Each structure stands twice: as C-alpha cells, then as structure tokens.
Amino acid sequence: MAEHFYIKTENGTVEVSQEVHRTFYRMSRQERTQMEKLLRNGVRSYDALVEMGLLQEASQDNLEDRVIRQELYQQLHRAIDSLPEAERALILAIYFEGLTEREYARRISTSQPNVNKRRHKAILHLREFLEEFC
Image (cartoon, rainbow, N blue to C red; front, top):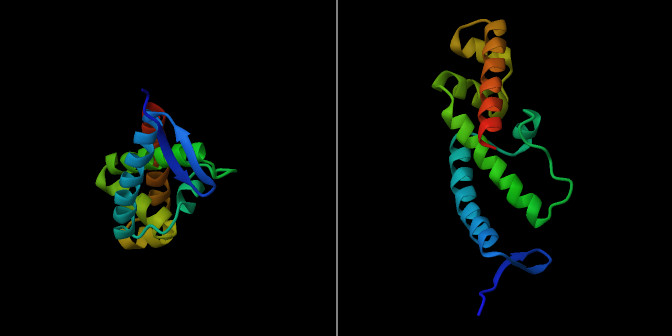
C-alpha cells in the first residue's frame, strides 16, 4: 500500500510526493535557522535580495513558488557565506543594513569609487556562484 504525503497550506491540505514533502519540511526548518542568522546580521526582509537582482518576487504565492523561493534563498545565503570576509561585509552593509557606498567607504576608510568597484566584484562572485549551483 502506497503512503500518502500532505502539506498544509492556507487553502487546505495538498497531497504531494514523498520527495516534495521531505523537501518542504526540511526547508521550513532550514529557513527558520537562516532567518535567525539573518536577524543576527541585521537583515529585515527579502526586499534587499530582490533589489540585488538575485531573487524575483513571486507573482502568486502558491506552494511551488514558495518551495522554489526557499531554495533560492538558501542558495543565496550559501553564496554570501562563501564570499571572502571583506566582500561579505560589504554586501551585508549595503544591501542588508542599508548603507550607501559613501557611508560604507567612510566606515572602512577608503574611497566611494573603491567601494563601488568592490561591490560590483562581490555581486559578480555571487552571480557566478548562483549560476554554478542553481
């Protein structure tokens, strides 16, 4: 007899495959852990990720969109974690803390054009990581 797997949604319960069920609940746990980590680093929302062009806003919040968005979110955080410390600090400061390039340049005692160059390089590294692993 085949097992049945279900996921609770706002509109009721949906039957899914075992793989989707495992992935969904594993991602829920991982998402909570990632959110706690982001909150410690001052992240407030997905808006910064959308602004960076690394995530797209979902037009409909259905189960498939949510699972895909969670996976992309996890991949992005793996990519950010893989950056060298200086690039990671820059990305967090500009996109998550909301600092301008000029404010960040003052913070680390360098010029705004230098920060701009470093930001472009960090984003390039993030895109390369995401293209390779997504």
